[in-house]
Image (tube, rainbow, N blue to C red; front, top):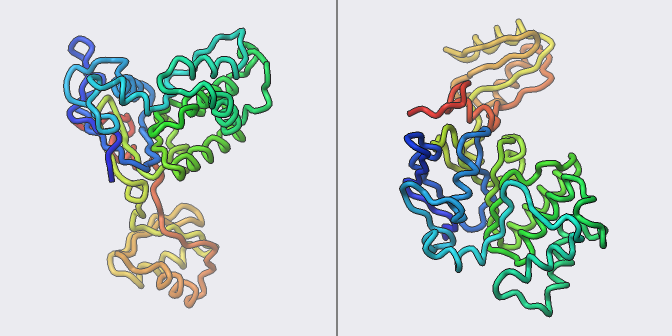
Length: 309
């Protein structure tokens, strides 16, 4: 698929300290792409370089197939952004702010502007605000208005830095659903967050950053692949362990109360379950263990969150 973001050896140093260190990103058209890492890992600096707000120390950037920052004018016309919180005129309504934002851009028809503003406000759940000034908005409402500004020109690429900041759980759910709809409509979404569980729920691909270095970049399916072990919940943990050890040569069993974590050397879980039930073990649950993004991240970086160098 066509790459909409590509970096090669992207580096940013302040003095002798690398904040982003030889980063190779690949975001494909149609991705709902999660850009992950703890606070201070270099995510926002990377985004600012992608958008031409900060010049890299080394490496190269292509945005929608165009070199950055050389072709920033034409590339950014097709990109919607929300970086480090939205800024608006506080005494004006959200609608009027969006009108001024749209008028400042190139190739925006004045005739269709009201319809575009209405559509953007509706998509982010702000169609009810009317003439209410932005200074009366909550933090979550301001964040929604920032998303509306990013969407008003129906961009090919949406670049978002912590877009659910300030939203309540219902608002987070609504915005997640919006991202999925946007991708279905043909917009590629690049979503930066330190909230791994949030990315895990909706993204199709992800990259993980630690101390400015890329530690993983793959599909969510591969990042969250089963570990090869089984999780067993049973009222008969001692008997279950005995059955498993007799069933599988070299099986490993970690038992904590009524919960067992077992490695059965690739034996299908249904076969294990049949043996347990046949031996009279009361099985409440038997499932393949799957990693969370947090598991994957810590497995790659260690508890410190530092990338291996």
